Image (spheres, rainbow, N blue to C red):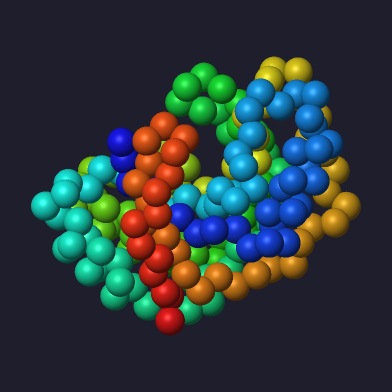
Length: 173
């Protein structure tokens, strides 16, 4: 079991990701459900005794202009040896500030399981579309990319394998 802090992808980005999945469906090994398409800010373990303190600090985060804007497609190697098709997200000051704050809080009140893509300073914001096989050699072309969308909330969830339970939604304003 772990704790995930994430931004839920706006509808336009979720629909874009669904369209990309359709284009590569013959190479898809597994899919995320559309209601879970998200941009991870941090992942780790918060001890039960520290949960109130962590949520109190998360609740105090006030950052404006946090946007999700698709920059392109890419393939990330997973820690499990898999390959993941992702929609890369443009880095912006608000998104990087939010991610750094969240990562610091999880590090203070638990442990951050940081993959290369989640460490502050090298954070590579993205939305995972699907796990794909080695047969996917060419990425789909991006003819229509959804417009940038500002997000105003983020979530803390408890995860157990692929099952999520939202603990709390936090407002950014």
